[in-house]
Image (cartoon, rainbow, N blue to C red):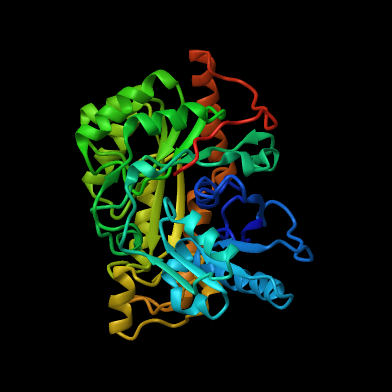
Length: 418
C-alpha cells in the first residue's frame, strides 16, 4: 500500500521574515503508520506538490485554519481522479463538519494505537467516514519518537542556518487561555510523556537545536525539574513556550540549555517587566508574543505597549491580531456578541482583522498591527534581531564544544509508536 502524506502550504505572518521549521504533526503521525505502508511525504511550504501521481491513499495533515482552503483544493484534485483522501491534524479537528464535505475520511484526535486499524479498514474497503477519538486520548506512553526520516532536511534552513527540530514532552494543558484551542484539542489535563522516552527521542535528534512545542512548560514544577535534570547532559540548545517563573526551575532550564522562550506579553505591568528580567538574568532570550486587538486595547494603548517592549529590551517580538478560531473561548464570546466579521478561513492567519474590535475600527487595528511591527523593528528589522539570537547560541555551542555543521543526509533512527 502506498500512502502520500501532504502538509499543505499556508501563508506566514505579514511583516515577519519567512522561514520554515520542519513540521511536527506529520512526523508524529508517520511514527504511527505500520512499517509495511510505503509512505512518502511532501511539505508544500518548501517544495512543489505534484498531484498527477496515483497513491493508494492521500493523507492531508492540516495544522492551521488558514491552510484549509488550499487543503480542500488538493483533496479535490485527487478525489476527482478517484483517489481517496483522509484529513487529520489540528485544523481538521477544529473544522470537522466542514472538512467532511471535502474528504473520504476524517481522523479526529490522537493517532497512537489507532492508525493500524485505519489502514486495515482501508485495505479491506471499509474505510470509515469519521474516526472520532477527540475525547479518548491514548496512553501517553504510546507516543513514540517522531519519524523525522521522512523530512527532506536540506530544505529546512534559513540563509544556510539549519532550522530547529520540533519535539514534545507532554500533551494537554490545564490553562484555559482566551485565544487558545488547546483545551478542546488536547484536553485540559496535563499529560506528560515518560521522561525516559522524551530523553531517548531528544538524544536521537541529530540537530543540536530543538523547539519543545508543549503548550506550556509551567504546568508541573517537579516534572519540569526532573525533565531539565535529565536534559542537561544532552547539551542541546532549545526554545519553548513559557517556562514556569520560578527561580529553581529557571536555573534548571538554563543549565539544561534553554536558549530563548516565547513569552506572552499581555500588559505593561511590573509583573511582565520582572519576568522578562529574570529570564535575562538566567541567560535566556525572549521572543515576546503579543496579541493585538483585545477589548482593553485602543490605539494609544498599543503605542504604549510597543514602547514598553522596546524599553524592556525584548530580543524579538511577534505581533499577531487576536483571531477567533473555532472552539476557543474568545470565539464563543465574540459569536455571542455578534462581532465576527468573516469566516473566510484564508484570512485566519493571525495578521488580518476578522472581528469587530471593541475600541477601534477594524481598519485601525490593521493599521496598528503594521505600526507595531515597524516601530519595534525600526532599528534593524526582525531578521537582524533573530540573527543576534542565533549568534548567541552559536557562541554558547562553541564554548561547550557542541557546535557542529549539520549534515542533512545522515540517517536518523526513530522508535515507532505502537
